[in-house]
Picture 1: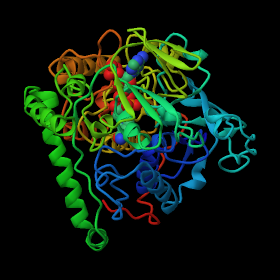
Picture 2: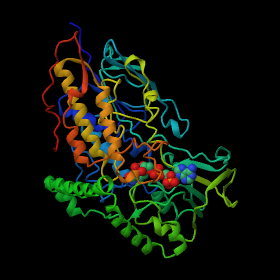
Picture 3: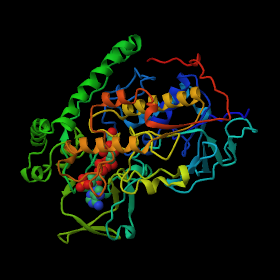
Picture 4: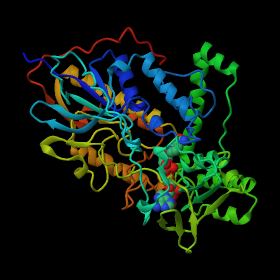
Length: 534
Ligand code: NAP
């Protein structure tokens, strides 16, 4: 009887990859490997480290349910603290030894015959995108040397869980002459901590979630700051404060209290979903609040006018900040609403013909999210290419599987994004689904599970029908949509509905193929070495 290869490959060691690993350990499944392109865990919280970066979801909700953190310093933790939290979780659950750092996935091809994914990797230079550094030493291969799952730079796995995330491909603006700029230019997601901003004339392009955190942080340091705004955002104050030592100690002594606090945040945020997905007119009430906040922060009527959005709140991401508006009123800041027409070697030119000299250009221009291009070359059954299948817009089933690409689970796949709550909650819903699928495969000796095309088509019809009634279809242009206007990024409902729908792996929606060559494998009992809060 042939040995069954049930290896699980997790791609990425950010929130999604680590959540999947914890769930597998909790279920007593430890035949998995995590592959991470960088030399540290953290995903988006490692890659993004621009000044002022703070999560805009409360930390007690924006953390793993299996690893609550009683010591969050404040309501909305800063990036450094979230990254430290993820490193701590990795160490506490002894995950580091399961991660192949510095290894990038080049491509994954599904072998119809064996029902296995053949995943090609390449060693990556440390900090490759930040510039050349020394070549990393040869990485240890996973498993025993004779392990047939690892062949040089290829890994064979029954199941692949991709936790690469949709917000990691920076979008660079298509501005004529940008490549000729001779000063310092960097994208918000590629911040250069070594570049001295003090006294410099800096231009920030964009006024989205990243920009409104960068601007107030760098404003006191720089000589002059030009903020280039294309579309003003709706901004609400951030109800942020530091937690007291007493609150942290109470969280430690009474974990239930912290869990209740988390639940309180969760349900308060769910109320917001009503405005986004059921009755967008509700958001009109919040527009009044945002206008009053703007008026209280920006006394200059001309500046206020420029900052007043002309679309329904929620259509683009609602931003929260306590210091963005105030920073725009400082003497060294200019808000430019004239479109940029050209970048020259040392300046930025706008439609009015005005030329502004700048030393550094910060591109806070977002990510390629709606493209939902496959994170690497993915070839499914019969050699079909995921990028080709997704040419007209990404589609999946429950945001997690894609027909024709068996045994592949995409964390934060199509239509799983949110405008109102924690993505960690969505990720953990997907993790539960993938885990149940893995257990089903093992218990039933399945070689492959492939979502049926008709089930996927019905699901996507439902998504688009529901999305048409949401605030995101109220007429603005946003990164949620493809150029043709199809929303492939957001979930059109409450998050508890998502959780309920992904509670169990619904085999009826799948084509199942039995692995004739193997004996049934036993799904182990819970791993006694690991304890979890819930
Ligand atoms: P974003 O929200 O897509 O904002 C990009 C900004 O750049 C927009 O203001 C956009 O204007 C502008 N822009 C793009 N191309 C331009 C061009 N050619 N000329 C002028 N302006 C241009 O990107 P982001 O701020 O990086 O945020 C992306 C997402 O990341 C957020 O929505 C959020 O989900 C996440 N994020 C979260 C946090 C947090 O939790 N703290 C922080 C940062 C980001 P238009 O509006 O006119 O397109």
